[in-house]
Image (cartoon, rainbow, N blue to C red; front, side):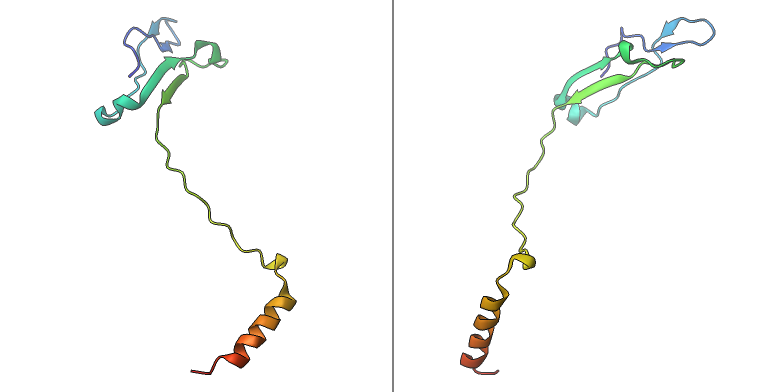
Length: 93
């Protein structure tokens, strides 16, 4: 996915740049590629390879989170009263 003309690696001895690095993407995913470019300005000290920024367009499913009951906020007096009421009005099984 990285264009072939891009030189990515500086040889330690000869100091010549070469095309040592490759960026692969499966054919079925190639439509997701937005860009694939080296970042020469981000090359670290004594690092012979350039970092590559690959941007993909990915579909992310979102999930609606159901609220979780907070038992600390419950009105326990009201709960106990309703519970007692249900115990007395419903016949046992």
